[in-house]
Amino acid sequence: MALDGRTNSDTIIRKLGGIFTRFGMPEELMTDNGPQFAAEQFRCFAAKCDFRHITSSPHFPQSNGMAERAIKTAKWILKQDDPDLALLSYRSTPTEPTKESPARLLMGREIRTTLPVLKESLLPKWPDLETVKMNDTKAKRCYEKYYNRRYSTKTLPTLSVGERVRIKTDEEKVWTTTATVQRQEATPRSFTLETGCGGTPRRNRRHIPFTSEPKITCNTFCDTKGTYHSSHVL
Image 1: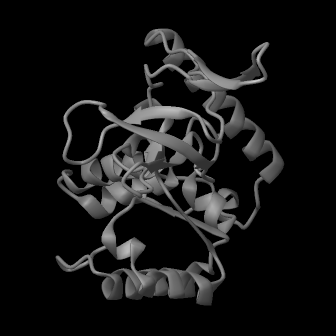
Image 2: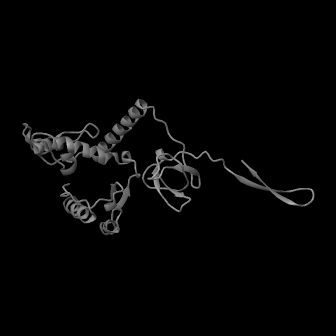
Image 3: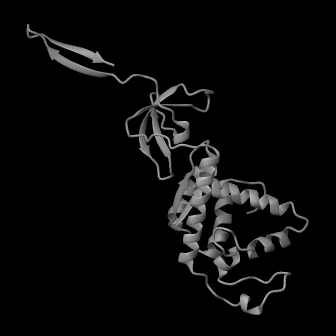
């Protein structure tokens, strides 16, 4: 999507509008937290087109992995001697997860390339979408399994609303600021926090360690003389 060097809200909305007129309006759109997507103008555009706008966790581009992978593929195509032919080959080649080509998933038919093919394969024939979704889900689970095994990943403890944690602000190099979990966002493993200064930053679970501050509770008791005392229990 060429933006002519400009990435403000007006340019983004104009380019997305052109895509929507060709392929229809989406039900959900996921972006990063760029200022052009956080502007009031883009929020009005999302309401007008009736789609749900979800942003990835700030400072955590891995949570928008599908877009990052698409950018990597686009850069590889642009480096080829003939980018148009490379893009044609990409769109006509079945992918490993879905077992179908992007062209057939989009248009219900294969597209003609420089390779000889049977004319019957160019006729409209929609793939079984349920099978495609099942194959895609199965492949992604397999990728996740091997990734977790390779990098010895582990599931982080869950966070509950009101829990005390530590975060790192944009000006800090270490996790020194304490905050309270306010709510969990729609993006997986993304939480909105509340700091003592009144700020409400959003972070991915990976960037939210537990605080070392002890939990303090106050117990009130009455002695034999009828005097009430309070004691702090760590």
